Image (cartoon, rainbow, N blue to C red; front, side):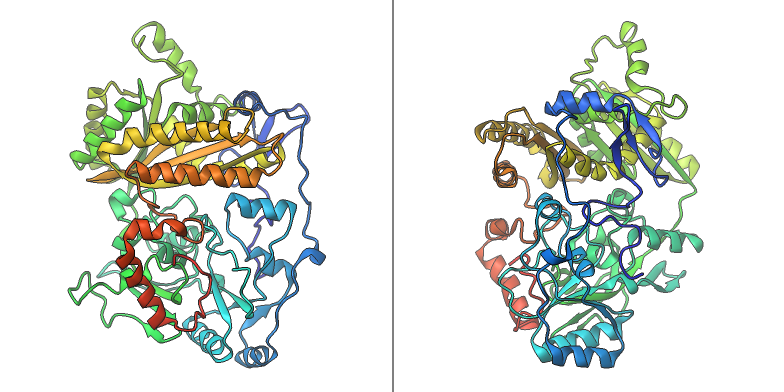
Length: 574
């Protein structure tokens, strides 16, 4: 079918993968897709109850399925439909298809899905299968003055897919999922030309058949698309080796209301005025549809090794990451989680002894002898991923662990490292479980200069706690952070926060006020509006402050020239 295969309708990810509480009241993660699948998590219930003051006796109810009568009726332009049928491009006006593409994965969007309905959703979904189909759709939208909202993997966390309520024209959701082929692989130049609708895991799987990879692995890579990465200026976990999307892209073809925009050659760099790729990357669906992308590829690395390091506290951990960045010897990935996230990871420990040796128990043996200085309520953990030639990986590993030792870090094994990365993929499923028990949560990110990392982390976490108290949240929130990327001049920091909303009449409003305050705090501490999630409609109010009046005017003038009738009317960014 054309709808997302195996995707859940009102939560994250796959239908067969979710957190549940079994008859004994123990947490389990279902399905076979992840290493955690089918495992019982004996300490997780206690962690939820302790952290959120949540009780499993109090369960919220969300709708089991979509009520078609709740769905806003479609606005239909008959002349357009006639023209569309003549093109033989597949389309649907089905209520479920339309609702599925009316949202991304912001908290408020998922809340609406569970409890209400969007006021405005796409009126029709179309499935082009190639660049030429997209050209036809855009031409018809211009001819009939309709609105197009491009849709890739639907993993947006910036309200970018939300349909503007005041849009009176017919809204076309242009779903790129059927444009998912690798058109060619050029082994001499190590490039591949790929249609923009392919999702990350399929791209890597198909390239691997020829012995290659892009190495671009965002946490959403199971669902997010190449076109979406380009449109949002995405970043991947292994950017230290492979680069962010702007480093990976060699050539882009994009269909706009003014026509097709692309460069005339496939070269690594040019000096031909401001780079037009930088108008396309980060344009968030406001200028057109990316249809084909030439991307750099690399031979699949022969060797991969996980690792982890425990630090006595967060400050030491950050200092170590800073030094690694300074020496420019960062592994493929290096991440540092604070103590609250360490405790959380520990709570997700499965019952099996085999692959998951208990982290804390292992440390406890040490406490008595070597490391009296480690307090389990203060320590923090870095997870590492090395890849490349075996020989080089082992040298590299020694170099990084030697630096860690200077900052009081202790090697804590491969399993804990690997587990840390696996948790990244299942963490998104946790929100759906939380919502069943009056707990709402969200993550957001920023980039920040090195000398502001510690202040920013501390101030934002404290601000979240303070705002919750002031807004009448009755139980202290979970307010936690991790440093996920290092650069020469700074780092990317991710925050997770969640709270128990029992007793609050309008939890989403309260949540949005807290999130807004957290972003104000980030900006006040020298952090950016976004490192890789993008702006969408969620963060648009801060754009002027972020890039200056004139900067915003420059972007507006591009929009005005490329799309004077606002055919690409999702209202993101500007």
